[in-house]
Picture 1 (cartoon, rainbow, N blue to C red):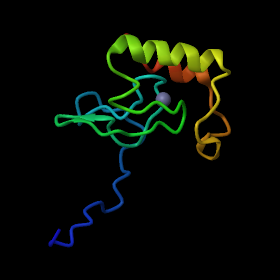
Picture 2 (cartoon, rainbow, N blue to C red; picture 1 turned 180 degrees about the horizontal axis):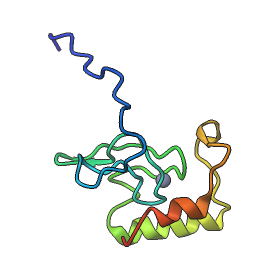
Picture 3 (cartoon, rainbow, N blue to C red; picture 1 turned 180 degrees about the vertical axis):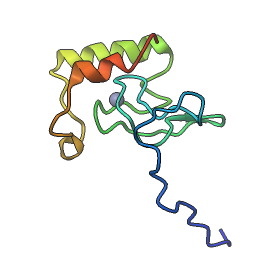
Picture 4 (tube, helix red, strand yellow; picture 1 turned 60 degrees about the vertical axis):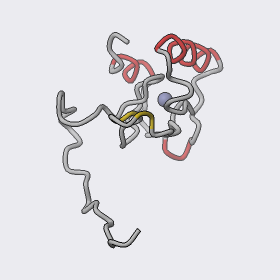
Length: 103
Ligand SMILES: [Zn+2]
């Protein structure tokens, strides 16, 4: 409260380079979707709901085994989007999964 700090001045900037090391990762731990904001910070989970798989950070992605299990069940259900309106036209599940890397 108090200071009128809306902060973000069009903070999109770096879309292409998936900065290794620059800031906390913004990818969903369950499905690899780029949430646009870090699901976890130094303070802990941000309770971000993934638009793609619907996982909630701090709930569905801890421990790592639960995130894997969530992902498997989500894929088994058909990998349906939590918010289909956000889904890119050229979205590719397997391409996204490769971005997860070793969990
Ligand atoms: Zn997700």
